[in-house]
Length: 338
Image (cartoon, rainbow, N blue to C red; front, side, top):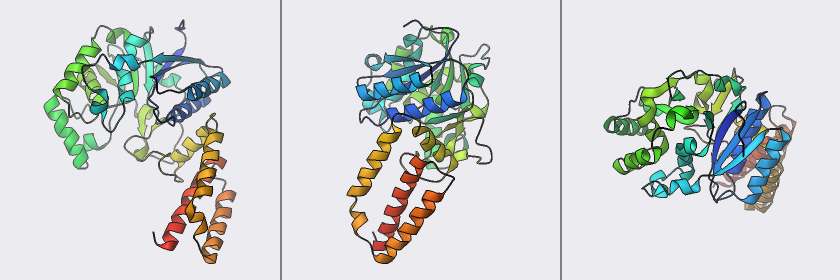
């Protein structure tokens, strides 16, 4: 396809072997489109795990907002690395490596890369308009455990950075990146990545560690609002930030009433996956054995809580179902002692 230079170009990576990950990309897109006035061209880096249903839902979503969508099969590029990608990425996924090949996959000069666990509560043009000057990449420092050495995990990562020659104080998060592809194309990323992964097979965060290794000296530290970590939430000011569920439990793994998690469910309800999730939760609730193991008193308690949740004005209809489901199963388990 012909890519228009006057559009904002945003890249997401989707690796979806279970067919459930694409919905998170949908949330990213809805949140971005809802807060951005400019024309955006979205590029989905994927492999054979992106099924037809998810692909069609993404097409439907982007068309609804009148934006542009481009699918790019990045799977074969993983094979150019001289390493076992699945073994290398261990707790992550091979999809995390897709971002390493953006400069070879897109014929544009600049792109924004976003992980699929972010919520865009600002106009993405603010990030697009950042002047990189002579730098190759715009980044937000990792304000998590590695920079503060807060726990054993942070200390292990800091130790790895020490012997790999990566500066801890300059360590950045790779979940949000502004990339000048013109400056990066003269680098042989396949060879550089292969050499790094072969030399450091115990890398903690493969793509992030590698990008820090090669870009730290040519990275521009940008405003923290462009990658505000979910664990550092300031609930007094939710707007004007790009939220990242980094280093915390994802909202789809644990339902809470936290404002940032509520945003996720709110935007999910605006995607083609919204109704599907309601149906899934309803079926799971109906099949649960805990719905049939409770006392009369427990029933009264649950019914009262159900009415309170349904009357709450602070959570969306979709989120209400999720919260109710978790709350009821928790109370029943507690009641019967399991």
